[in-house]
Each structure stands twice: as structure tokens, then as C-alpha cells.
Length: 164
Image (cartoon, rainbow, N blue to C red; front, top):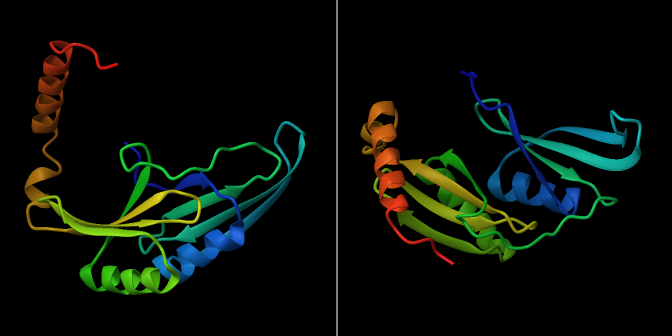
């Protein structure tokens, strides 16, 4: 089993606009930049790879790749979002910073095991700040219970007609 997440990478429209959101609103410091002028296959390119550090030493990273088509659109939470563990004070700070910049904010939403607030970044991605609630300990980590629940879902889904 891998030890932990090193980084998760996404595309961005503009590295500076993305830096301003993740550093100044979310509070993740810009940790590294990696300009890429040639791919490992030898193709010339002009890409900026940026890394923003989380408290645990992992990173959220972005590629600005103007020469490669990519459809930027507001993502639905079910399609794509990143959830970052936070605490209530940090969520309050981020909410104030987001409001000051006119960033879309939803929440907080009580999911029973976490309380989440959602922010839309300048690339259309949803960033969730999740505050652990006491029920999380009972919910997460019971691998056998999780497998049984997934199997029950699969069985029930197989018995239903397909959705169009």
C-alpha cells in the first residue's frame, strides 16, 4: 500500500490566476514551479507545472499547457472535486477571503462524518474544505464493512433497469 499522496495534478488556464486562488484564498503556499520546454519523448512544448503544499507535505499541482487543448468548465461535485482536510477556524478564514474576491461558496454542509464548505477555483474545479466530525472515526477504516456495503450497492444496482 502506498504511504500517502505525493501530489494530485490538474490543468489550469493561467498559473498566476491559479496561484492567487490557492495561495491567497485557500492558503496553500506555492512550493515549486517546473517549466517544461520539452517532453520526455522530445516534443517541444511550453508548459508550467506548479505545486502548492499542504500541511502534511503533500501537494496539489497544476499544468498550464497553452499548446494543448483542454475544455475548462465548471465541474459538478460528483464529477470532480478535491477535498482538503481543514479545521473550523481555517474554513472561516478561507470563506472570508473567498467572499472578498467574489468566489462561489457553498456550505457548510453537514455530511454526518464531516462538515464541508465548497469553493469554486478559477479553473472550474470545486475545492472542498472538510472538517472532521466525531462520527468519522466510526465510518472510516472499517474495510470489511465498506466492502460489504459496496457489494450490496452492486447487487441492488444490477437489479435495477439501466438509466438512460
